[in-house]
Image 1 (spheres, helix red, strand yellow):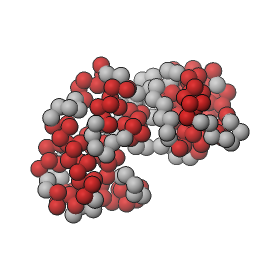
Image 2 (cartoon, one colour):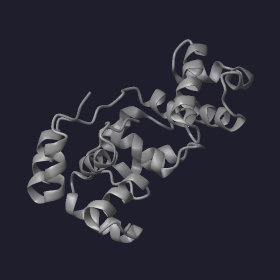
Image 3 (tube, rainbow, N blue to C red):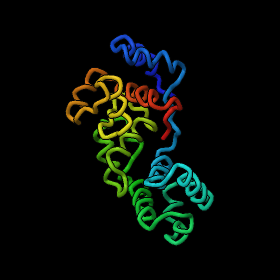
Image 4 (cartoon, helix red, strand yellow):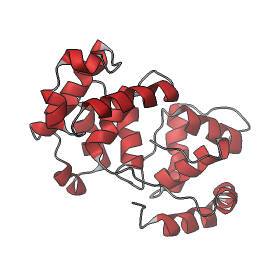
Length: 205
């Protein structure tokens, strides 16, 4: 699934910002893509915390193999010992269980999200143990394809803005927030291109 707003966003950003105009032209054809299922995306993000991508892929493969399906009920049916045997820490087992309970109890209701703001979804997600604001923002960009998320605490975004706009000096958080106003209502798209400028491979989540 790709966002229907992408071409419009790219055209408007390129017309208003020469730096982004260059990046849009350089990475023409690239687009944000959603991996789909919200629960599995969030579960995978918890599994991958504070370990290498390679290790995260390995642990996730074992978790996926141990479950009949990647779904809240299946996670809740697993014993903590069985999840630990997949390579998860005790804390991550707790986090996965809390995520599954939020979905199964309806505290997280994907069907309601179309009517919720970014801030409201972030509040819903960060009520889950192990999900912080940055994780919720990445989820909004990469899973929900929300067009105007601006992850102020993201190191890659800070580094790219410093490199392209601030002579290599990272702007303070407040200054970065003000700086990003120029890219509304397409701050997710601007951020995606700024990430690409640091790493030509598309960012995935």
